[in-house]
Length: 282
Image (tube, rainbow, N blue to C red; front, side):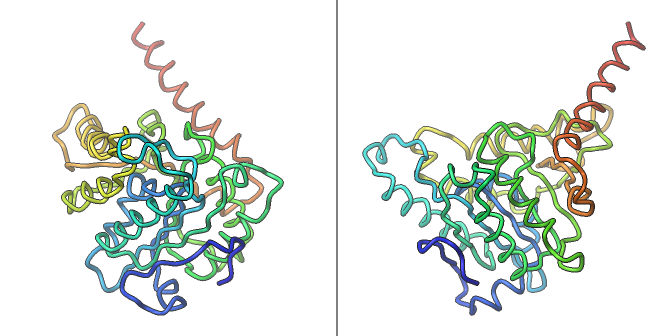
């Protein structure tokens, strides 16, 4: 698999040959930055953890050069931060027992440029090499522009695949803006209660972010726990940790669907639900 950037590459924790490592993938997560994967795709990581039948692969689209830094990392150059973040991601792959990590190494500006087709082209190559059953990606209502761009480039890549090479399910996941606002019928509920010690450790491994001023480890586990408790107002908790996702599969099954209209319809159903409650109770 030849990717665009000379600095792109693969990390395979168990040393399996590249082609075999990628082809065994059953669950694939495509994230913008190092640690996005561990925040948004724990469901897929757990599917592959300690399993001989299911394998999780992570793909990092950007090079991470523009990440915020503080503390011990305050004076690090962009190049040094890129190296640190890749090492941290490699560590997470070992702890989480990933099949592989693919580094595409685009800049955020390149990913956000709708006229640059290289990102989608590389993602298409990766999807053909892995042929996953499930794909996890940022959701199109995310607050972070680079995350939204990665989602759109991924959808473009998925839509370009032959029908028999498309995954069974595509899930848009939470990072910057959670999905609690989705109506119950539109909300995909992912139970991520198992191996909570591994889940907490994975996010905490990204020390350049945690020690650099962003406690993603606390925030991520707290959000999952809060989702589990606030999921149902009239019943006891059915899980200890929960993540939410948006089902993007229809956008891949029917490439003529407009992404903006698709998300607008989800927002419209939420607005109608709120308006209905106010009307009936007011």
